[in-house]
Length: 121
Image 1 (cartoon, one colour):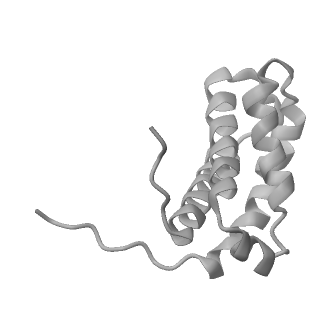
Image 2 (cartoon, helix red, strand yellow):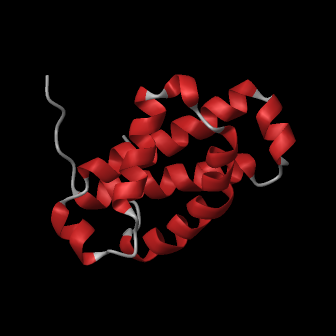
């Protein structure tokens, strides 16, 4: 069953949330600590994968109007994690978490409207 298309703002928010989680997960670690912890590596890889999956769903209009975001690189990294899972470079993912994710956060924050209030039922 095809999944329902969400508004661009929802995908951008998903990207921002995942990028923040990646940064939060790695910010107090050294690379050797990251490398030794399989659960942390999987969590960071999953966060990077979510960023890429959400990027696929963002409309071409948004992508074209925001060339400062490296959409193609983000989507390629997602493909690499999903399809070349047996050849993941920990140093590259660490670099994504330490350098590219914080930069992505800065670029996404102005594009993401505040989350809708939670309904209380």
